[in-house]
Length: 513
Image (cartoon, rainbow, N blue to C red; front, side, top):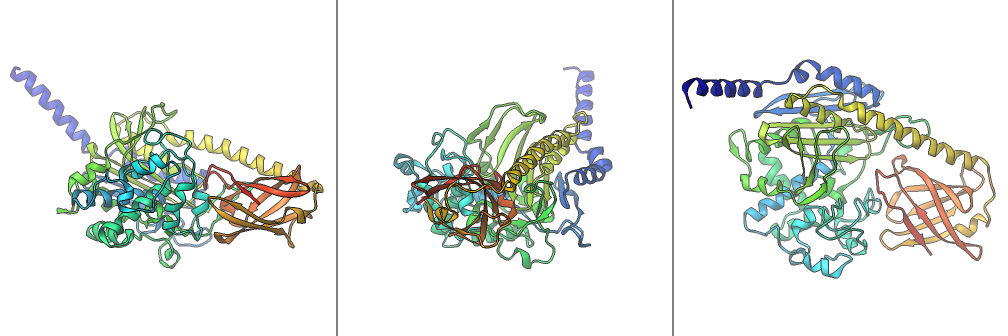
């Protein structure tokens, strides 16, 4: 290589390094405008975002309101439900214990949890901690969430109920997102350490990082001062924005119980991007982080319609996809009234966290893509346009569906059997029992009321429509409005199908007596 060629190559490399170190103009000049415009369009009351670049926090700020109608603004310390962004903390804790030789990620679950079982006895004997963390149990994605979400089931109950869930896919082959699997993985921690899941994660990860404004249990969320209130516009015929009650997700803690702020998550991201170090201090060995980042389960090889990636894997508590020639690690989270996204790109020393207090918008996803585009120096394309148009179509259909149910109820048809013939106690093997009685206060003449054994604060009104079908309206609006079909024999109700919104669980639950 001659000197001229060498100097040309060196000049090009220096130019690339210079460009690499520059914060994109979109971030410095356009981020505020982009966020505020899309928040207004998508009815998002509040949002917080942080961007970490080369070990420094270059953006950490809030937009909008913590609570509609109140003057308190979101800032970088405002708490949001992190939901499934908890999972990487659980996986990291277990990977750390493996690095310390206190367990192996390939340990059989039965070694630590003798009461554990899946529906399939052969899979029960084979399943490992890694299988739990890699979402490859073969069950349907999110199956069981209706049973556990805001219910009085304990973490032990969540684990034990896995034996009742019939698999729809192949063990270790098919991707199946399972909150119950992560809860089970979290239960291994006290068996090995003598500490609860939340205590161990707090002492070994949160405290060393100085994440003093992060909490691993949701029960005391409302008692904190600087909190975001959750909203949805999913479950009415007019799409009105509604405040929803705070979730209590402590029974799903290892899968989704954490609450935090963008300032605190920024510390986590800096540690991820500095090979396990924060402010010059070793928090975790890089081998621990590396263990969580190994692709374990294929999610899809389908090309995304708007985001330029062609594959997506699930690692351990984090997803991996290619984006603009970058390996990107990312995870989303959703709880009633909240959506979150955490993303980091080790090759670019780039981290992003987006928190919103509205659960019917995907702006937490599209904003992440928009920032990635900026750092990849891709031509500008409004990534939220696709998500927004899709959400408008979805919301329009949902509104039409709810209005159709209203129309059927308004006809005041008479049920084919007396209302009392539908009443009684019904049972689902996974859930437990519901009790149905005639509603004394119903908006229609032909109404029933459901009481749920494991949701003491939840009821559902059943208003008759036609052909043994009722409209179900849950007292917690985020559970949704849907048709509920009874089966009858000999003039008596023998079963009923209960379905919450897909945000809770894709599956209907059949209760029989």
